[in-house]
Image 1 (cartoon, rainbow, N blue to C red):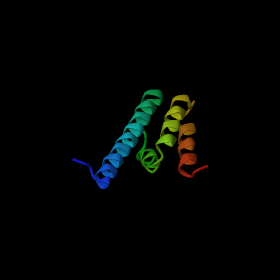
Image 2: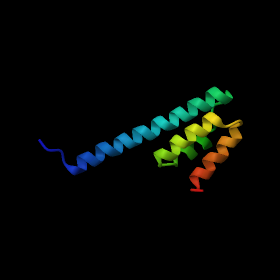
Image 3: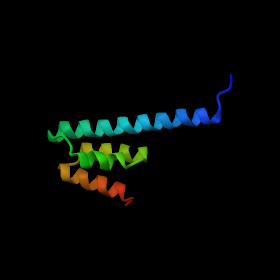
Length: 83
């Protein structure tokens, strides 16, 4: 039986959403480990507003390398505004 293109699009979108949720969860976990804080809801919302998985992967690297949480927050704001 052949799968419809609509079904394939739904499956692909589900995979993308899962990858996005996973990337955000990993970023938040890393921030908690590095800075011993639970990120504020505003930071979580800012990350969720980013749809580009590549940007989220870059932000994971930023979370790993940031010397201070504030530096990471600035990187998120820059990513959200497309700069």
